[in-house]
Image (cartoon, rainbow over all chains, first blue to last red; front, top):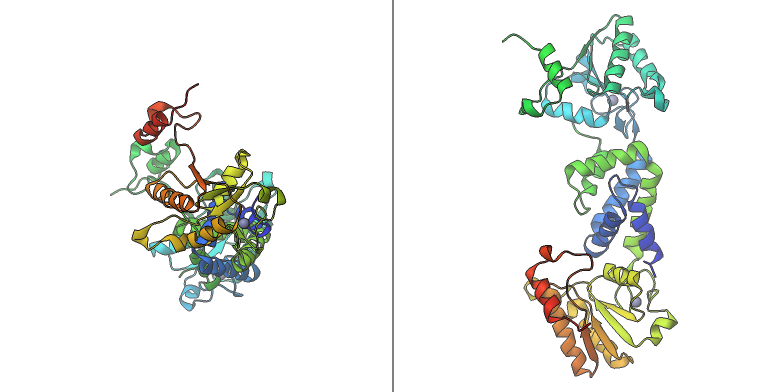
Length: 199
Length: 199
Ligand SMILES: [Zn+2]
Ligand SMILES: [Zn+2]
């Protein structure tokens, strides 16, 4: 004897969420049924609307339901002739929170990974090349992740930039602020030394 | 600059799930947008259908979209004149998995908690009293949780049963199978001693 069909389907469906197994799925289903049906209906609608209408910004590839995202349509952003290349839309939020950057973005939605069949066109480099040709971008900041794939992707795009005669830079790697040297991995530590600056 | 309205609403809505904060909500939203839109649409529909149609079984109060649940409509279950009282629908599943019990259930959907304004009628004891009067139940097994509130609730229902001239029993407390004595709390251990059986 198991749960009724609608409850069984609800529990099964919850397993599509990252990190949610059978136990959590059951807990979520009963929590909502018992205590928050309005919240569940709100989430149901939000998921439906987002999955149906959110697509990629025609210019920077981040997620948006508009033709162009809020950053791409900002006049102030358009004046800044500097483009930051990131792997994911979440990276944009992280960078925006620092208020360090006021230019435009390009989102790869991943990184080069030939072994998984992810080549230049899968991460939108054809669109990026067109943008480097057509626009007045003066500098490209490569803010891909400091992983093997992220570095390879940054290197590839750096070469694209030099073919277009555009300056490319890589974000600095080093010891995170507040990090303890003792617990930093060797690779980061050697970046921190080679990237040292006179004070 | 934040996410687009639909994405912002999606992330906010995810926070209705138990144990999901801002970070997890963001991770779930992007995971689904990037990798599993069909799964998200399935979950959206499942949530909508369950929240709209799942109600309580008219006889045992467990969650079901039918008038009566699968257990209450089972002829074999109706013949067993024994009723097990539990706090939640999930408890039924746990008990069913043991195959130890083949009678019917009554689900309190909680426990007595005067401080929170939860009295007898909030946990359906009026419905239970009617059932004890009308049906041919011979024994009531009190399987509420071994907490202060669960014990108080079991005690209260036990008295109801004796007023109806129906035998009531409480599930045994003791050392869990596979548990190590060293790590069992004192209260459980004293239950294990007072409930000892000759072998
Ligand atoms: Zn954009
Ligand atoms: Zn029922």
